[in-house]
Length: 188
Image 1: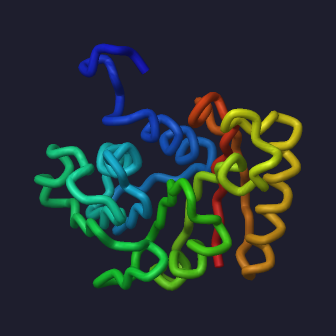
Image 2: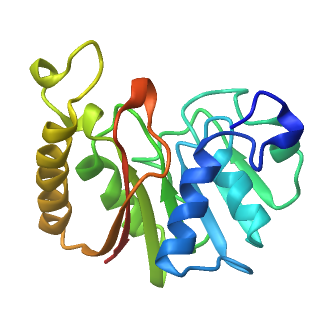
């Protein structure tokens, strides 16, 4: 991303990650009802809207973080101070996107599944540095060779929840401190 806001394609770097996943997974959310767990500033929300989503439920435990342009968009329902592991949306959704930090995938995915329509999908951003045992980290960074091992463990846990992993994709840009991240397309 460039320093000049007018040169950025999305409100945050996260939008680039989701855009790459939508393209790679062949998904076009135009007309879909979506939920974004861990909205923060709104990079995923922004990407979904630019791709034509009819509505996005922006769920985050924080308050006042979502960009003003998104919180005032009539297609966005802001659910602040709301834990995605316990939220009940007012309607089933076609797609849940997930970008959370400290919450392990195996804890947040069960509620994501409960929010889906029968043919719904999940795109989740897997952050091995948050899933790994702390001793593996070096100043907050998980070495690449260990990131792959942690990813395998996370994917096994996801399968253990009864979810199908259709595809995974390395994030086109690194996460915090250069950590490797991965996007996964899941269905119940």
